[in-house]
Length: 299
Image (tube, rainbow, N blue to C red):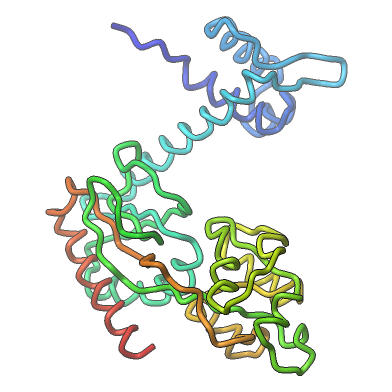
């Protein structure tokens, strides 16, 4: 049976028009005429039987259905592009597609990755940011480095390291005075989106009940928290190994050397069971576990 899928040309025209909220700007991006974009969108709406844009004298605006469809189309086009580039770049070599938590990847993994490339020049490692768990069956990822409890159905989890969140801030925020848990409770608190209860856990471990422990700017990445803390926006809970440069140059200091209890959570390399026999993945796994052990000894 023929698939009920619109033409790729129409989907590309729709994605660009939705992103720009303009047929004219989409036409400029795709080197087409505005009329050609209009025809593609009209044909797509006829195919779907759904209005995607509302037309007015001032231009076009996505409908509710168009907004929902635009996000899904963009994700699928991104996946096709990524898979196409991976195939074009492989040229017979082995490659690994890894999902990684962003700040861990930039601050800990990438500075060490050249060593793996030297040991295994035949393997190319591709990294894509993912901050939350997903289904491997729905993606092209070979493995993931994530933070959690290691319980990910259908996978083998390999422990890398604990996190040890510490309260850090700009030294200017402390004004040259020593910090205490009680004083930190009075300072602006920077929150991490994927660890919403971290400050509550920290204050509880210090024997404090702080009513405002979940208030303050909520940021998704540790790198964002670090920048906010550097600019004196508040105190953040960050693992020191992710901000070694900031600690070394004095833009951040550990306000109080008391970590958040880890409650069994840590960084893991997670490999789907169907991939465990991959030679490239085995090589990367062995190298990564060795690097993690060396870090635990030296760090």
